[in-house]
Image (cartoon, rainbow, N blue to C red; front, top):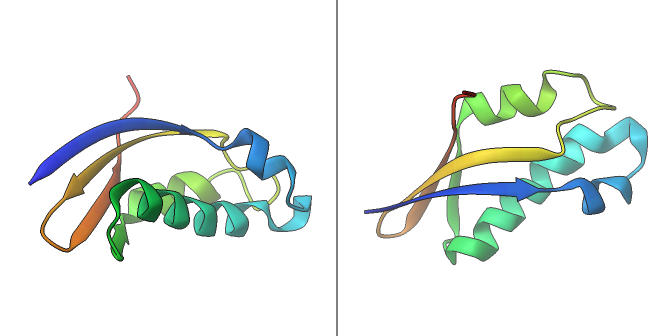
Length: 84
């Protein structure tokens, strides 16, 4: 089992989406980004990450996320690192 701590900056890609669907776009974008970085087809995104994305509504999601990725044999689990 391999654990990585990464900070993903999504600002440049987030600006390209319309304002009224940015949080849903960010969820899909995060899934694809983790899939590319880990080379795993089975990506499990924790509920805390989803709550952080949707915490400020659909129009104003966070542009940077600090995440912990745990890789096992055929799956990758993504969790949010606590602030501080």
